Image (cartoon, rainbow, N blue to C red; front, top):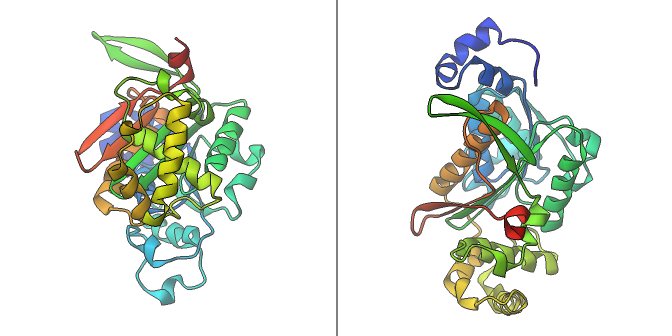
Length: 323
């Protein structure tokens, strides 16, 4: 992302941001390219944030057609069937996002996310995925790790009034100020596949219940060949059975994954806009940090539950578990 300086127009447009994180950080942002797949409410909030921040380009991938459920938390799509009839989510969101910041190039990439080649993925500096299967998350993350440059990878999932973000920055080096001096910091991240493969008995004693519940739901959807979020309260008995099997395999008490939490994650198919704003805001902040090199990045899971209003960061990584 090294290269051209900011233009006079960019400097004027992003004047307030430059005062906060500096011209070099803004230059990095303005030359960055972001791939975003799965355009639900949380991801829409994220897209709005990074477009306003002034990234170089955003490529949208989501061939789904508009439904009432998808309209619930997506403020980019007009509630007018004459407008969205026959168009994909990505096409509709692309048109609206361009209005937020004409300096940012917003485009659409058609096709299934899992079919995108490593060469295509290599064009981007950050990849954000949502609304995709467990196997697709692993596959795309693996492709990000195969290229010669570092590509920041993120997954985000919002169900009911709960949300989860996963971050993989691979081997990340950044600078920060400490005691009036600039110091170099290094962080080593696990891939998504490595992180969720860590035995539950090796996790922190007070690990988020949401982390465990999400892994159960994710596994259930994979075993049943369901689309992400394609669940209902009728699935609870089978999910409880799977929870029992997984907890026994990991030597963990089932009480750490309460029925009430599973019920919420299974039953609600609608995102809550206030929660979307929170999760999307955190995700936008993290991508900006990773690209600009400013600020301590999140490592490596973030959870939010509106029931207690808390945001929790969990470091669930292979290196930590082995240590």
